[in-house]
Amino acid sequence: MTATTAQLPRPETGPSGSPGPAGPAGRARVTPDGSATPVTARERLYRPMPTDRFVGWLAPVLLAVAAGVLRFWRLTEPRGMYFDEIYYVKDAWGLMTAGYEIDSNTCNGPAYVVHPPFGKWLMAASQWLFGYVDCGGAAHGSPELGWRFSSALAGTLAVLVLARTARRMFRSTVLGCFAGLLLALDGLEFVQSRIGILDIFLMTGIVVALACLVLDRDHGRRRLADRLDRVAAGAAGTGSAADARYGPRLGLRPWRVAMGVALGASLGVKWSALYTVIGFAALALAWDIGARRTAGVRSPVLGALRRDLPGWLVGFVILPIVTFLATWTGWFVTDGGWNRHEHGDGFVNAWWSWWDYQREVLRFHEGLSDSHPFRSTPMSWLVLGRPIAYFYSSPAFGAEGCTAPGGCSREVIALGNPAIWWGGTAALVGSLALWVRRRDWRAALVLVGFGSAFLPWLLLPSRTMFFFYALPSLPFLVLGLTAMAGLALGPRDASEARRLGGALSVGVYTVIVVLLFAYFYPILAAEVIPYSSWRMRMWFPGWI
Image 1: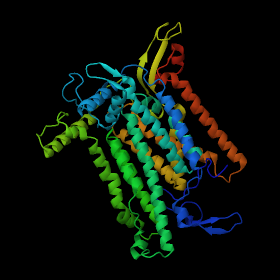
Image 2: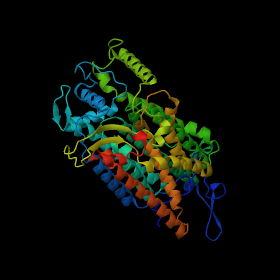
Image 3: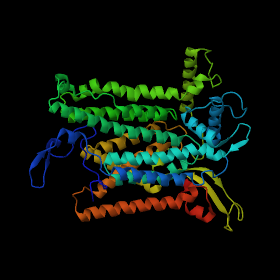
Image 4: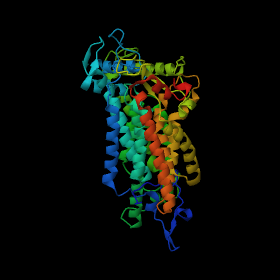
Protein backbone atom coordinates (compact mmCIF):
# COMPACT_ATOMS: atom_id res chain seq x y z
CA MET A 1 0.00 0.00 0.00
CA THR A 2 1.22 3.53 -0.72
CA ALA A 3 1.91 6.28 1.73
CA THR A 4 -1.58 7.61 1.28
CA THR A 5 -3.39 4.37 2.00
CA ALA A 6 -5.08 3.54 5.26
CA GLN A 7 -2.91 3.20 8.31
CA LEU A 8 -2.58 4.61 11.80
CA PRO A 9 0.87 6.20 11.74
CA ARG A 10 2.76 6.61 14.96
CA PRO A 11 2.00 9.98 16.52
CA GLU A 12 4.61 12.66 16.15
CA THR A 13 3.82 13.69 19.71
CA GLY A 14 1.49 12.74 22.48
CA PRO A 15 -1.57 14.79 23.33
CA SER A 16 0.56 17.02 25.51
CA GLY A 17 3.16 17.37 22.80
CA SER A 18 5.73 15.04 24.38
CA PRO A 19 7.91 13.18 21.92
CA GLY A 20 6.32 10.07 20.47
CA PRO A 21 7.87 6.63 20.18
CA ALA A 22 10.06 7.37 17.16
CA GLY A 23 13.22 6.51 19.07
CA PRO A 24 14.98 7.45 22.30
CA ALA A 25 13.11 10.49 23.61
CA GLY A 26 11.51 10.64 20.18
CA ARG A 27 14.69 12.24 18.76
CA ALA A 28 16.18 9.44 16.65
CA ARG A 29 15.01 6.77 14.27
CA VAL A 30 16.62 3.46 13.47
CA THR A 31 17.26 2.86 9.74
CA PRO A 32 17.14 -0.59 8.08
CA ASP A 33 20.95 -0.91 8.35
CA GLY A 34 20.76 -0.46 12.11
CA SER A 35 22.13 3.07 12.29
CA ALA A 36 20.38 5.90 14.08
CA THR A 37 19.51 9.16 12.36
CA PRO A 38 18.25 12.22 14.20
CA VAL A 39 14.61 13.20 13.99
CA THR A 40 14.37 16.92 13.35
CA ALA A 41 12.15 19.25 15.32
CA ARG A 42 10.07 19.80 12.19
CA GLU A 43 9.44 16.07 11.85
CA ARG A 44 8.45 15.83 15.49
CA LEU A 45 6.18 18.86 15.26
CA TYR A 46 4.47 18.34 11.94
CA ARG A 47 3.79 15.22 9.92
CA PRO A 48 3.37 15.86 6.16
CA MET A 49 -0.08 15.41 4.64
CA PRO A 50 -0.75 12.71 2.02
CA THR A 51 0.27 13.70 -1.49
CA ASP A 52 -3.00 12.61 -3.15
CA ARG A 53 -4.58 16.08 -2.90
CA PHE A 54 -6.95 15.61 -5.84
CA VAL A 55 -8.24 12.24 -4.66
CA GLY A 56 -8.21 13.57 -1.11
CA TRP A 57 -10.87 16.07 -2.15
CA LEU A 58 -12.67 14.06 -4.83
CA ALA A 59 -13.39 10.99 -2.70
CA PRO A 60 -14.90 12.89 0.29
CA VAL A 61 -16.94 15.11 -2.06
CA LEU A 62 -18.36 12.07 -3.87
CA LEU A 63 -19.13 10.49 -0.52
CA ALA A 64 -20.93 13.66 0.59
CA VAL A 65 -22.91 13.73 -2.66
CA ALA A 66 -24.05 10.16 -2.02
CA ALA A 67 -24.99 11.10 1.54
CA GLY A 68 -26.90 14.10 0.21
CA VAL A 69 -28.85 11.95 -2.24
CA LEU A 70 -29.91 9.70 0.64
CA ARG A 71 -30.98 12.64 2.76
CA PHE A 72 -32.79 14.67 0.09
CA TRP A 73 -34.56 11.68 -1.50
CA ARG A 74 -38.24 11.81 -0.43
CA LEU A 75 -37.35 14.56 2.02
CA THR A 76 -40.93 15.83 2.07
CA GLU A 77 -42.20 12.52 3.49
CA PRO A 78 -43.99 12.24 5.79
CA ARG A 79 -46.17 15.18 4.92
CA GLY A 80 -46.97 17.80 7.48
CA MET A 81 -45.19 18.49 10.74
CA TYR A 82 -44.21 15.64 13.01
CA PHE A 83 -42.60 15.35 16.44
CA ASP A 84 -40.96 18.63 17.54
CA GLU A 85 -41.32 20.20 14.10
CA ILE A 86 -44.56 21.60 15.47
CA TYR A 87 -42.46 23.91 17.67
CA TYR A 88 -39.35 24.79 15.69
CA VAL A 89 -41.03 25.22 12.30
CA LYS A 90 -43.40 27.79 13.76
CA ASP A 91 -40.59 29.53 15.61
CA ALA A 92 -38.64 29.74 12.35
CA TRP A 93 -41.62 31.22 10.57
CA GLY A 94 -41.86 33.89 13.28
CA LEU A 95 -38.20 34.77 12.86
CA MET A 96 -38.65 34.97 9.09
CA THR A 97 -41.62 37.29 9.29
CA ALA A 98 -41.04 39.36 12.46
CA GLY A 99 -37.45 38.81 13.58
CA TYR A 100 -38.53 36.99 16.75
CA GLU A 101 -40.53 33.87 17.64
CA ILE A 102 -44.29 34.49 17.48
CA ASP A 103 -46.93 32.80 19.64
CA SER A 104 -48.38 30.28 17.19
CA ASN A 105 -51.62 29.94 19.15
CA THR A 106 -52.63 33.57 18.77
CA CYS A 107 -50.47 34.50 15.74
CA ASN A 108 -49.68 37.62 17.69
CA GLY A 109 -47.18 38.52 20.36
CA PRO A 110 -44.00 36.77 21.41
CA ALA A 111 -43.53 33.07 22.11
CA TYR A 112 -41.54 31.86 25.10
CA VAL A 113 -38.77 29.67 23.69
CA VAL A 114 -35.96 27.90 25.54
CA HIS A 115 -33.30 27.52 22.85
CA PRO A 116 -31.21 30.23 21.16
CA PRO A 117 -32.32 31.29 17.67
CA PHE A 118 -29.47 30.38 15.29
CA GLY A 119 -30.74 26.94 14.28
CA LYS A 120 -34.20 28.37 13.72
CA TRP A 121 -32.72 31.17 11.61
CA LEU A 122 -31.23 28.49 9.35
CA MET A 123 -34.66 26.86 9.06
CA ALA A 124 -36.22 30.27 8.40
CA ALA A 125 -33.79 30.82 5.51
CA SER A 126 -34.78 27.57 3.80
CA GLN A 127 -38.48 28.27 4.39
CA TRP A 128 -38.04 31.64 2.72
CA LEU A 129 -36.45 29.88 -0.24
CA PHE A 130 -38.73 26.86 -0.67
CA GLY A 131 -41.97 27.24 1.22
CA TYR A 132 -43.72 27.45 4.56
CA VAL A 133 -47.06 27.30 6.36
CA ASP A 134 -48.10 30.65 7.75
CA CYS A 135 -49.60 31.12 11.19
CA GLY A 136 -53.09 30.84 9.74
CA GLY A 137 -52.33 27.38 8.34
CA ALA A 138 -52.08 28.37 4.66
CA ALA A 139 -49.33 26.57 2.72
CA HIS A 140 -46.93 28.47 0.46
CA GLY A 141 -44.59 26.70 -1.94
CA SER A 142 -43.32 23.33 -0.71
CA PRO A 143 -43.57 23.65 3.07
CA GLU A 144 -41.93 20.36 4.07
CA LEU A 145 -38.98 21.04 1.79
CA GLY A 146 -38.77 24.51 3.29
CA TRP A 147 -38.38 23.47 6.90
CA ARG A 148 -36.29 20.32 6.24
CA PHE A 149 -33.91 21.51 3.52
CA SER A 150 -31.48 23.21 5.88
CA SER A 151 -31.35 20.11 8.10
CA ALA A 152 -30.53 17.87 5.13
CA LEU A 153 -27.87 20.31 3.94
CA ALA A 154 -26.28 20.47 7.40
CA GLY A 155 -26.26 16.68 7.74
CA THR A 156 -24.62 16.34 4.33
CA LEU A 157 -22.03 19.01 5.07
CA ALA A 158 -21.09 17.21 8.29
CA VAL A 159 -20.17 14.09 6.28
CA LEU A 160 -17.80 16.05 4.04
CA VAL A 161 -16.18 17.98 6.89
CA LEU A 162 -15.68 14.92 9.07
CA ALA A 163 -14.15 12.93 6.19
CA ARG A 164 -11.67 15.70 5.47
CA THR A 165 -10.91 16.14 9.18
CA ALA A 166 -10.27 12.43 9.68
CA ARG A 167 -7.99 12.45 6.63
CA ARG A 168 -5.92 15.18 8.25
CA MET A 169 -5.91 13.51 11.66
CA PHE A 170 -4.80 10.11 10.38
CA ARG A 171 -2.90 11.31 7.28
CA SER A 172 -4.89 8.86 5.18
CA THR A 173 -7.53 9.43 2.52
CA VAL A 174 -8.84 5.91 3.02
CA LEU A 175 -9.39 6.42 6.74
CA GLY A 176 -10.92 9.82 6.07
CA CYS A 177 -13.48 8.29 3.74
CA PHE A 178 -14.07 5.48 6.23
CA ALA A 179 -15.05 8.06 8.86
CA GLY A 180 -17.28 9.94 6.42
CA LEU A 181 -19.00 6.72 5.36
CA LEU A 182 -19.79 5.77 8.95
CA LEU A 183 -21.35 9.16 9.64
CA ALA A 184 -23.31 9.02 6.39
CA LEU A 185 -24.76 5.59 7.24
CA ASP A 186 -25.72 6.18 10.83
CA GLY A 187 -29.46 6.06 11.36
CA LEU A 188 -29.63 8.80 13.98
CA GLU A 189 -27.63 11.26 11.87
CA PHE A 190 -29.75 10.32 8.85
CA VAL A 191 -33.06 10.86 10.62
CA GLN A 192 -31.97 14.14 12.24
CA SER A 193 -30.95 15.34 8.77
CA ARG A 194 -34.52 14.85 7.55
CA ILE A 195 -36.52 16.57 10.27
CA GLY A 196 -36.93 20.24 11.08
CA ILE A 197 -35.47 20.31 14.59
CA LEU A 198 -32.26 21.74 15.98
CA ASP A 199 -29.86 18.95 16.87
CA ILE A 200 -28.36 18.39 13.42
CA PHE A 201 -27.25 22.04 13.39
CA LEU A 202 -25.64 21.58 16.80
CA MET A 203 -23.73 18.49 15.67
CA THR A 204 -22.62 20.07 12.40
CA GLY A 205 -21.41 23.19 14.18
CA ILE A 206 -19.33 21.03 16.52
CA VAL A 207 -17.92 19.07 13.55
CA VAL A 208 -16.92 22.33 11.85
CA ALA A 209 -15.31 23.53 15.10
CA LEU A 210 -13.51 20.19 15.34
CA ALA A 211 -12.16 20.60 11.82
CA CYS A 212 -10.88 24.09 12.66
CA LEU A 213 -9.32 22.78 15.88
CA VAL A 214 -7.34 20.12 13.99
CA LEU A 215 -6.36 22.60 11.27
CA ASP A 216 -5.24 25.07 13.91
CA ARG A 217 -3.08 22.41 15.55
CA ASP A 218 -1.35 21.65 12.26
CA HIS A 219 -1.08 25.32 11.32
CA GLY A 220 0.40 26.32 14.67
CA ARG A 221 2.92 23.48 14.76
CA ARG A 222 3.99 24.09 11.17
CA ARG A 223 4.45 27.78 11.88
CA LEU A 224 6.44 26.94 15.01
CA ALA A 225 8.68 24.63 12.94
CA ASP A 226 9.18 27.41 10.37
CA ARG A 227 10.24 29.84 13.10
CA LEU A 228 12.67 27.28 14.49
CA ASP A 229 14.15 26.77 11.03
CA ARG A 230 14.74 30.51 10.78
CA VAL A 231 16.46 30.50 14.15
CA ALA A 232 18.63 27.55 13.12
CA ALA A 233 19.58 29.38 9.91
CA GLY A 234 20.69 32.41 11.93
CA ALA A 235 18.14 34.80 10.40
CA ALA A 236 18.44 38.37 11.60
CA GLY A 237 16.26 39.28 14.51
CA THR A 238 15.62 35.71 15.65
CA GLY A 239 16.95 33.57 18.46
CA SER A 240 16.53 36.02 21.35
CA ALA A 241 16.81 34.89 24.94
CA ALA A 242 13.05 35.19 25.35
CA ASP A 243 12.50 32.97 22.32
CA ALA A 244 14.85 30.38 23.77
CA ARG A 245 12.95 30.36 27.03
CA TYR A 246 9.36 30.73 25.82
CA GLY A 247 9.52 29.93 22.13
CA PRO A 248 8.68 32.29 19.26
CA ARG A 249 5.43 34.14 18.79
CA LEU A 250 3.17 32.50 16.21
CA GLY A 251 1.13 35.52 15.16
CA LEU A 252 -2.46 35.38 13.97
CA ARG A 253 -3.93 31.88 13.86
CA PRO A 254 -6.83 32.10 11.40
CA TRP A 255 -8.19 28.62 12.07
CA ARG A 256 -8.46 29.42 15.76
CA VAL A 257 -10.52 32.47 14.83
CA ALA A 258 -12.76 30.32 12.60
CA MET A 259 -13.10 27.78 15.40
CA GLY A 260 -14.27 30.46 17.81
CA VAL A 261 -16.98 31.52 15.39
CA ALA A 262 -18.07 27.90 14.86
CA LEU A 263 -18.25 27.28 18.60
CA GLY A 264 -20.26 30.46 19.10
CA ALA A 265 -22.66 29.44 16.34
CA SER A 266 -23.07 26.03 18.01
CA LEU A 267 -23.90 27.80 21.28
CA GLY A 268 -26.42 29.80 19.27
CA VAL A 269 -28.23 26.54 18.49
CA LYS A 270 -28.18 24.96 21.96
CA TRP A 271 -26.50 25.84 25.21
CA SER A 272 -25.11 22.32 25.58
CA ALA A 273 -22.31 23.26 23.16
CA LEU A 274 -20.73 25.07 26.10
CA TYR A 275 -19.23 21.80 27.32
CA THR A 276 -17.55 21.28 23.96
CA VAL A 277 -16.11 24.79 24.15
CA ILE A 278 -14.57 23.92 27.52
CA GLY A 279 -13.24 20.56 26.32
CA PHE A 280 -11.71 21.95 23.13
CA ALA A 281 -10.22 24.89 25.05
CA ALA A 282 -8.44 22.59 27.51
CA LEU A 283 -7.18 20.35 24.72
CA ALA A 284 -5.88 23.27 22.64
CA LEU A 285 -3.97 24.72 25.59
CA ALA A 286 -2.39 21.31 26.29
CA TRP A 287 -1.40 21.06 22.63
CA ASP A 288 0.16 24.54 22.71
CA ILE A 289 2.23 23.59 25.75
CA GLY A 290 3.20 20.28 24.17
CA ALA A 291 4.25 21.85 20.89
CA ARG A 292 6.65 24.18 22.67
CA ARG A 293 8.02 21.32 24.77
CA THR A 294 8.61 19.28 21.61
CA ALA A 295 10.37 22.29 20.07
CA GLY A 296 12.85 22.29 22.96
CA VAL A 297 11.58 25.42 24.71
CA ARG A 298 12.96 25.64 28.25
CA SER A 299 9.68 26.86 29.82
CA PRO A 300 6.88 25.41 27.66
CA VAL A 301 4.06 26.12 30.12
CA LEU A 302 5.07 29.74 30.63
CA GLY A 303 5.76 29.98 26.90
CA ALA A 304 2.24 28.88 26.03
CA LEU A 305 0.78 31.26 28.58
CA ARG A 306 2.84 34.22 27.37
CA ARG A 307 2.77 33.55 23.63
CA ASP A 308 -0.45 31.61 23.00
CA LEU A 309 -2.84 32.62 25.77
CA PRO A 310 -4.04 35.88 24.13
CA GLY A 311 -5.03 34.05 20.95
CA TRP A 312 -6.49 31.25 23.07
CA LEU A 313 -8.72 33.75 24.89
CA VAL A 314 -9.88 35.18 21.57
CA GLY A 315 -10.67 31.76 20.12
CA PHE A 316 -12.32 30.15 23.14
CA VAL A 317 -13.81 33.04 25.10
CA ILE A 318 -14.27 36.28 23.19
CA LEU A 319 -15.32 35.02 19.76
CA PRO A 320 -17.76 32.35 21.04
CA ILE A 321 -19.45 34.94 23.25
CA VAL A 322 -19.60 37.58 20.50
CA THR A 323 -20.91 35.09 17.94
CA PHE A 324 -23.49 33.73 20.39
CA LEU A 325 -24.75 37.23 21.11
CA ALA A 326 -24.88 37.99 17.39
CA THR A 327 -27.36 35.15 16.90
CA TRP A 328 -29.79 37.16 19.08
CA THR A 329 -29.67 40.19 16.80
CA GLY A 330 -33.32 39.77 15.78
CA TRP A 331 -34.42 39.90 19.40
CA PHE A 332 -32.42 43.07 20.05
CA VAL A 333 -33.33 45.07 16.94
CA THR A 334 -37.07 44.38 17.15
CA ASP A 335 -39.50 45.31 19.90
CA GLY A 336 -41.74 42.25 20.12
CA GLY A 337 -39.53 39.46 21.45
CA TRP A 338 -40.24 37.67 24.72
CA ASN A 339 -39.26 39.78 27.74
CA ARG A 340 -37.89 42.42 25.35
CA HIS A 341 -39.01 45.40 27.48
CA GLU A 342 -39.06 43.79 30.92
CA HIS A 343 -36.72 46.51 32.21
CA GLY A 344 -38.00 49.28 29.98
CA ASP A 345 -36.62 50.89 26.83
CA GLY A 346 -33.10 51.76 25.87
CA PHE A 347 -29.88 49.91 25.17
CA VAL A 348 -28.90 49.09 28.76
CA ASN A 349 -32.40 47.98 29.73
CA ALA A 350 -32.51 45.70 26.70
CA TRP A 351 -29.42 43.90 27.97
CA TRP A 352 -30.91 43.50 31.45
CA SER A 353 -34.12 42.15 29.91
CA TRP A 354 -32.13 39.69 27.83
CA TRP A 355 -30.14 38.57 30.87
CA ASP A 356 -33.34 37.91 32.82
CA TYR A 357 -34.65 35.93 29.86
CA GLN A 358 -31.55 33.71 29.93
CA ARG A 359 -32.02 33.12 33.64
CA GLU A 360 -35.61 32.04 32.98
CA VAL A 361 -34.37 29.59 30.36
CA LEU A 362 -31.78 28.18 32.74
CA ARG A 363 -34.43 27.60 35.40
CA PHE A 364 -36.59 25.85 32.82
CA HIS A 365 -33.84 23.43 31.83
CA GLU A 366 -32.86 22.76 35.43
CA GLY A 367 -36.44 21.89 36.34
CA LEU A 368 -37.37 19.85 33.25
CA SER A 369 -38.44 16.46 34.63
CA ASP A 370 -41.70 15.69 32.83
CA SER A 371 -42.63 12.11 32.10
CA HIS A 372 -42.43 10.99 28.45
CA PRO A 373 -42.84 7.54 26.84
CA PHE A 374 -39.51 7.89 25.04
CA ARG A 375 -37.57 9.34 27.92
CA SER A 376 -34.16 7.67 28.31
CA THR A 377 -30.96 7.80 30.33
CA PRO A 378 -27.52 8.67 28.92
CA MET A 379 -26.04 5.21 29.55
CA SER A 380 -28.84 3.67 27.50
CA TRP A 381 -27.90 5.85 24.52
CA LEU A 382 -24.67 3.96 23.94
CA VAL A 383 -26.49 0.62 23.65
CA LEU A 384 -29.50 2.05 21.76
CA GLY A 385 -31.74 1.18 24.67
CA ARG A 386 -34.58 3.58 23.90
CA PRO A 387 -34.72 5.12 20.41
CA ILE A 388 -37.52 7.58 19.65
CA ALA A 389 -40.45 6.98 17.33
CA TYR A 390 -40.87 10.38 15.69
CA PHE A 391 -43.70 9.22 13.43
CA TYR A 392 -45.82 6.07 13.16
CA SER A 393 -48.92 5.08 11.24
CA SER A 394 -50.64 1.74 10.44
CA PRO A 395 -51.98 1.78 6.87
CA ALA A 396 -54.59 -0.90 6.25
CA PHE A 397 -54.47 -3.24 3.28
CA GLY A 398 -55.05 -1.20 0.11
CA ALA A 399 -54.31 2.16 1.76
CA GLU A 400 -51.17 4.24 1.12
CA GLY A 401 -49.73 1.52 -1.08
CA CYS A 402 -50.03 -1.24 1.54
CA THR A 403 -50.12 -4.65 -0.17
CA ALA A 404 -49.96 -6.85 2.95
CA PRO A 405 -53.28 -8.49 3.95
CA GLY A 406 -52.26 -8.19 7.59
CA GLY A 407 -51.74 -4.45 7.32
CA CYS A 408 -48.62 -2.29 7.20
CA SER A 409 -46.49 0.00 9.28
CA ARG A 410 -44.90 3.31 8.45
CA GLU A 411 -42.39 4.81 10.86
CA VAL A 412 -39.60 7.31 11.38
CA ILE A 413 -37.53 6.08 14.30
CA ALA A 414 -34.43 7.85 15.54
CA LEU A 415 -32.29 4.71 15.77
CA GLY A 416 -28.52 4.64 15.48
CA ASN A 417 -26.71 2.05 13.39
CA PRO A 418 -25.96 -0.75 15.90
CA ALA A 419 -22.56 -1.51 14.34
CA ILE A 420 -21.52 2.12 14.83
CA TRP A 421 -22.89 2.76 18.31
CA TRP A 422 -22.00 -0.60 19.83
CA GLY A 423 -18.67 -0.70 18.04
CA GLY A 424 -18.03 2.96 18.82
CA THR A 425 -18.56 2.36 22.53
CA ALA A 426 -15.94 -0.39 22.41
CA ALA A 427 -13.67 1.95 20.43
CA LEU A 428 -13.73 4.39 23.36
CA VAL A 429 -12.01 1.73 25.46
CA GLY A 430 -9.52 1.19 22.65
CA SER A 431 -8.91 4.93 22.41
CA LEU A 432 -8.23 5.09 26.13
CA ALA A 433 -5.69 2.27 25.81
CA LEU A 434 -4.13 4.02 22.80
CA TRP A 435 -3.75 7.24 24.74
CA VAL A 436 -2.28 5.48 27.81
CA ARG A 437 0.18 3.44 25.76
CA ARG A 438 1.23 5.94 23.07
CA ARG A 439 -0.02 9.30 24.30
CA ASP A 440 -1.65 9.63 20.90
CA TRP A 441 -3.18 13.09 20.51
CA ARG A 442 -5.93 11.71 18.29
CA ALA A 443 -7.07 9.33 21.00
CA ALA A 444 -7.11 12.27 23.43
CA LEU A 445 -9.26 14.23 20.99
CA VAL A 446 -11.73 11.33 20.73
CA LEU A 447 -11.97 10.99 24.50
CA VAL A 448 -12.20 14.71 25.28
CA GLY A 449 -14.65 15.40 22.45
CA PHE A 450 -16.90 12.52 23.39
CA GLY A 451 -16.68 13.27 27.08
CA SER A 452 -17.56 16.93 26.55
CA ALA A 453 -20.67 16.00 24.58
CA PHE A 454 -21.81 13.06 26.68
CA LEU A 455 -20.62 13.11 30.29
CA PRO A 456 -22.39 16.33 31.42
CA TRP A 457 -25.75 14.60 30.90
CA LEU A 458 -24.78 12.09 33.61
CA LEU A 459 -24.83 14.94 36.11
CA LEU A 460 -28.57 15.50 35.53
CA PRO A 461 -30.20 12.18 36.50
CA SER A 462 -33.66 13.63 37.09
CA ARG A 463 -33.85 15.67 33.89
CA THR A 464 -36.04 14.54 30.99
CA MET A 465 -33.66 13.40 28.25
CA PHE A 466 -33.92 11.72 24.86
CA PHE A 467 -31.62 9.66 22.68
CA PHE A 468 -31.13 12.39 20.09
CA TYR A 469 -29.28 14.40 22.74
CA ALA A 470 -26.40 11.99 22.04
CA LEU A 471 -26.03 13.17 18.43
CA PRO A 472 -23.08 15.57 19.12
CA SER A 473 -21.10 12.64 20.57
CA LEU A 474 -21.51 10.57 17.38
CA PRO A 475 -18.62 12.15 15.38
CA PHE A 476 -16.22 11.22 18.18
CA LEU A 477 -17.47 7.62 18.25
CA VAL A 478 -16.82 7.56 14.51
CA LEU A 479 -13.30 8.93 14.96
CA GLY A 480 -12.65 6.31 17.65
CA LEU A 481 -13.73 3.60 15.22
CA THR A 482 -11.48 5.15 12.59
CA ALA A 483 -8.51 4.97 14.95
CA MET A 484 -9.26 1.30 15.59
CA ALA A 485 -9.53 0.68 11.84
CA GLY A 486 -6.10 2.26 11.40
CA LEU A 487 -4.67 -0.04 14.06
CA ALA A 488 -6.25 -3.04 12.38
CA LEU A 489 -4.77 -2.13 9.01
CA GLY A 490 -1.35 -1.77 10.57
CA PRO A 491 1.77 0.16 9.57
CA ARG A 492 3.17 0.19 6.05
CA ASP A 493 6.08 -2.03 7.01
CA ALA A 494 3.89 -4.83 8.39
CA SER A 495 3.86 -8.21 6.68
CA GLU A 496 1.51 -8.87 3.78
CA ALA A 497 -0.45 -11.36 5.86
CA ARG A 498 -0.85 -8.78 8.61
CA ARG A 499 -2.00 -6.13 6.17
CA LEU A 500 -4.36 -8.48 4.40
CA GLY A 501 -5.93 -9.63 7.64
CA GLY A 502 -6.43 -6.05 8.77
CA ALA A 503 -7.93 -5.00 5.45
CA LEU A 504 -10.35 -7.96 5.53
CA SER A 505 -11.47 -7.16 9.08
CA VAL A 506 -12.10 -3.49 8.27
CA GLY A 507 -13.81 -4.46 5.01
CA VAL A 508 -16.14 -6.93 6.76
CA TYR A 509 -17.03 -4.32 9.37
CA THR A 510 -17.77 -1.75 6.67
CA VAL A 511 -20.04 -4.21 4.86
CA ILE A 512 -21.92 -4.84 8.11
CA VAL A 513 -22.46 -1.09 8.56
CA VAL A 514 -23.80 -0.78 5.00
CA LEU A 515 -26.11 -3.79 5.34
CA LEU A 516 -27.52 -2.64 8.67
CA PHE A 517 -28.27 0.81 7.29
CA ALA A 518 -30.04 -0.77 4.29
CA TYR A 519 -31.95 -3.11 6.60
CA PHE A 520 -33.23 -0.34 8.86
CA TYR A 521 -33.72 2.22 6.08
CA PRO A 522 -37.50 1.59 5.69
CA ILE A 523 -38.17 2.52 9.33
CA LEU A 524 -35.85 5.51 9.13
CA ALA A 525 -37.47 7.00 6.03
CA ALA A 526 -41.21 6.41 6.58
CA GLU A 527 -41.56 3.70 3.94
CA VAL A 528 -44.73 1.60 3.94
CA ILE A 529 -43.77 -1.99 4.79
CA PRO A 530 -45.75 -5.04 6.00
CA TYR A 531 -46.34 -5.08 9.72
CA SER A 532 -44.43 -8.36 9.96
CA SER A 533 -41.38 -6.72 8.35
CA TRP A 534 -41.62 -3.82 10.76
CA ARG A 535 -41.88 -6.20 13.72
CA MET A 536 -38.74 -8.05 12.59
CA ARG A 537 -36.80 -4.80 12.87
CA MET A 538 -37.88 -4.24 16.47
CA TRP A 539 -35.00 -6.18 18.00
CA PHE A 540 -35.69 -5.20 21.60
CA PRO A 541 -38.81 -4.25 23.59
CA GLY A 542 -37.36 -0.79 24.18
CA TRP A 543 -37.50 -0.11 20.44
CA ILE A 544 -41.30 -0.34 20.33
